[in-house]
Image 1 (tube, rainbow, N blue to C red):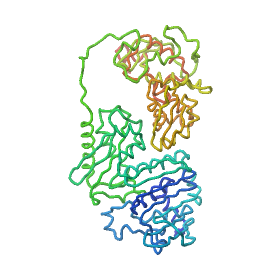
Image 2 (cartoon, helix red, strand yellow):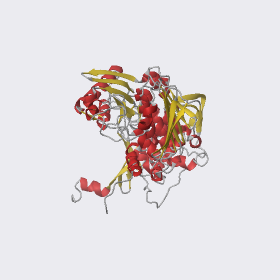
Image 3 (tube, rainbow, N blue to C red):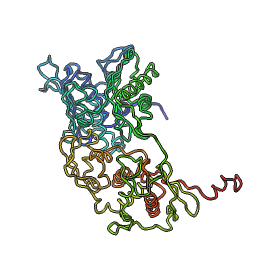
Image 4 (cartoon, rainbow, N blue to C red):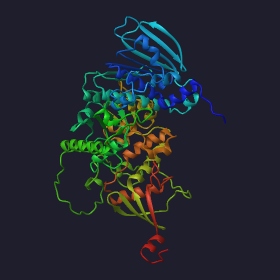
Length: 583
């Protein structure tokens, strides 16, 4: 095939693919331009998840009328003039690609006025072509309006995620910058609905309160550390406040939001042995170091950086977090000596230890009542004979480590994870009732729950589904909801904790349920409601759990795909004890 030079339009669209990946990428570039212009007010309006409209206005320095055509030209920037300047970058933007890339894949209108000019100017760009430069009345600052994103590259539209996902990406991005620049007033509207508004008074904890609620903001631990030329500031959550994923771990380096795996590893290493495996803290950390010690020109979207001394960064983060945790976390003390005790046989009220929030199996199991007789008011599960996942009749033998049940079957020994098994039992029962309505517990006094913008957007779009799973939730202002009832299975939890059981990002192991929204929500409820590891079960509760598991349609895995049991066959046991050959 012959070699030929690509047309300018095609080359621009290819280059734009590196900078403008999704609507949130456009918001990021425009917000960073506003911050570089020393704006104290940044307002973002989004419609259609950013595909129909993104408008970012600020009260910054503005752009001169004479330089306005250069603002949308590729590789035109006021941030640097020679290669050596790349080693001392102190602004968020520097490549001169953002506006040109956005204009090549959208219909862009740029209106601006400097303080020294009496009249503003408007520039329109469509698909990379400048359509006109007209005078316009405008306040000081800049307004960038991006319409019909990717209208001329429809293939890119097909690869975008769903509207709720794209909206969450924008919400999360603006939230991070509101935390990093508390002296700037941020206003975010999604489809003409206010999502975020900050005061711009410089108080970072006040921004935290507007995002997570006053109680959460009050509990966050402040981090202050100075080591040589490295400054680390921010907030981290105490050890009892965790999330199911890393989403709320945020790093800023010299005012720039970055994603860095080693820094995340250092943070988690500082929390090691203090929080449960699979749980992650909330952290918002801001690092300041000399510009020459960090290379920001290593990623097309400037989301990654390279440190001159990465070991110093790793150890500095680890020490700063560990100091903060030790300063605020009391040293536990033993009130009584540990002694071996006989396991109780009359329920969990006499047993120890058990998780404070974990209800007993007797409270969860609907097949037996307190008297041990079958409960005729609850539909009993039927045995699924002949199915590939069905179990033989099992006999409960005992409990190991307050986490695993030992059961005997005709074909060997079964080790059962009590939490995963109970998840499966509850999941199948609730899914059987999802067509009507899951039992809910009406709260005596409605609970007001405040959530971050991205989480609030998720809840707002799923209120009808939440009602089917036992929640009664009403919008109560930006990022705030009124919880009137919660599923009966979660009645022992605080309403906010119960709602967070739904809000938290779905873990990677929940992928098999992605196509079934009802199943995903029910799986989350069951995960919180099931008995926990460390919860001692009586002999009757052990037998009830095994009996209920036998009746499940898919008894060998929990709703998230994890195994509920390990089978050790008689043949394997005989080989291990030398009764048969080793092969």
